[in-house]
Length: 267
Ligand code: SAM
View 1 (cartoon, rainbow, N blue to C red):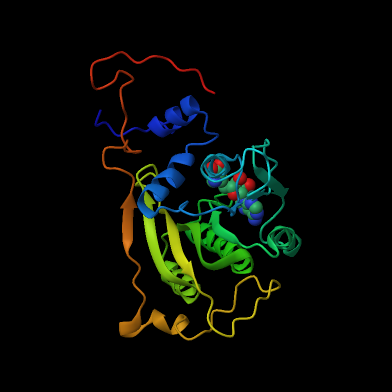
View 2: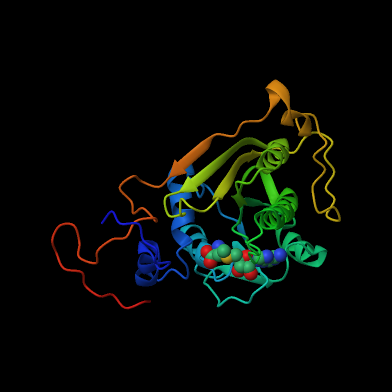
């Protein structure tokens, strides 16, 4: 233990296989929940950019209904194997038609939680990748403004690039609390983090408009916070129990208490 692992298949990868999660990302959502109690009182949720489906699995186990009454709606460009209690839409969240399909499912009964783990295909050009990531986040935010109930919560992957402050300011227009969280299962070397936005409260006079990729943020406490003493500073929180595995370390297969590792086949 203690060696930095260069192996992409780290301890969380192994644990995901052993525990039947479709991707190691499941641990990111579970660790965010440990810190922020995201699922408390939640009965309806949307998982944007959901494939292969480990966040939907977490949502399905924590809040979904095994009877299949569809309390969780999962959306991705790619098809996903079915999950109990999860209604699926295959589509592009930046497209109007997909957003309309999602919103239609929540008409009359809004969602408590919208999550988005969306990642564009990485080009290696940091600025372009950050820009594309921001576009996905803003498309997700636009959908969230249509489906979230007042007080609802929005969690989205962000890359902590140079323009991240602008995104935080945009999020602050719609949520009373915005934090930047880094779960222990997210590799330290990665600029990935998650914006955790709680207390959905659109500004007075805010008009929903799905045709704009970005909700109109030119409201009171919006973009003017970018400069000077009102510059919006977002707290950074690491989450996941300190005793949980560190995604940047390599671990021997044998356990620390001396007992031998028993092979568990992937589920
Ligand atoms: N949270 C997922 C899980 O736990 O299994 C992993 C999500 S994966 C990191 C990112 C996903 O974003 C990919 O499946 C990709 O297809 C999806 N994606 C990227 N751009 C998208 C878009 N415009 N609309 C819908 N999905 C998109």
